[in-house]
Length: 118
Image (spheres, rainbow, N blue to C red):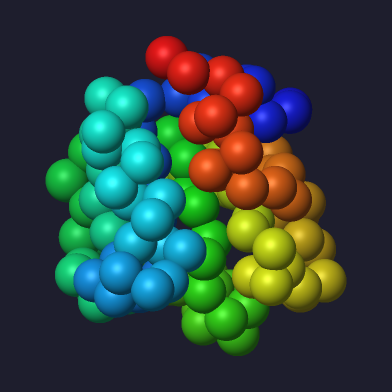
């Protein structure tokens, strides 16, 4: 899976502070919405992935890895893929995703939007 594959998906869940205009999670949310993606936000808006009301194609981690792994481990929802933003990565997250056979990529959604517009 590469960044182009990720950006072909339609339903994204951004995990992070999507209410603070200074944060990348907010910037990613706005960019995805303005480019026609369906977006839900976990962290400041929803409390868990289980609250998302659509099938999760991509979880975009923009959060401290300790909180990110906790949210991933505590969901009952199926996740098709995970995009791990710079600074949100940890070996524990990668090991968990590999054990669950969930494809993941370390990369940036803003770059993906710029390179692979819908």
